[in-house]
Length: 291
Image (tube, rainbow, N blue to C red; front, side):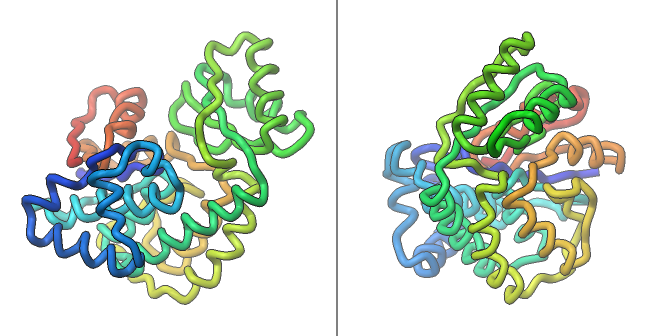
C-alpha cells in the first residue's frame, strides 16, 4: 500500500520550487495564483531569497505548503492509500487527498503562520531536540519542571522535541543531561510550537477552520493529534485545530500506517527529513521522494 507524507516547517531551502515553476505551465499557474491569494510574491522569496528570508514563519509555512502541494498536483502520481503530514504538512496532506481545496488550504496556512507569529511575539519560547531519552523519563521531568514545557514532537523512538518557556526548556535539557541522556540540542526556531504558548494562535484560527468547507478525503489521513486514520470532515477539523497546542505523534503515525499495510512511503516536498525518520522506524520499507 502507498503512503504519501508531507514535511513541515524547517525543510525549506533557497531556490525551492524554481525548477518546477520554470518547467511546468500548470505549476507556474498555481504559483502565480498563490501570489495573488497571499498578496505578495512569495515566489520571489522562494526562488531568489536567502535562508534568513525564508525562515520568517509567515513565509516558511506557505512556502513549504506550496512546494509540497504544487509538486504533488503537477506530478503523475497514483491515488495514495493513506496520507499524513508533519505539523504544517498536515495541510498539504489534506489538499492532496481532496479534503481541502488548494485555495482554502493556502489561506488557512497563511492565517496559521500569521497567528503563530503573533503568539510567538506575545510569548517567546524555545524548543530542544532530545536524542536517546526514555519517553517516560522525559515526560516526568517535563511535568516536574516549573514553568511551561511539554513534549512537542515524538519523531522516533530515539528523538523527541520539547517546547515551552525558555527557562523551563533549558532546565529540562540540563536535567536530562545530568540523567545521562546522550544528546540535547536547543533549536533555532521562532517560538514554542505545539505547546500551550500557541493557545492564542489556536483561538485565532478556530473561526477560519470552522467556516472553511472540508470534504471526505479520497483516502484516510493519519493526523498529528491522535495518529489515527480519519475521513470524517468534522473530526479532521477538530484535530487540525488542536494540533497547534498538542504534540505531533509522528512515531505513532508511522507505526499505525505500517500496521495498516503501508509498504511504500513517498515524501513529497522539500528535504528528506521524514525519510530519515521512517528509515529509523521501518528500515525495510520502500522510500521515494518528490521534491
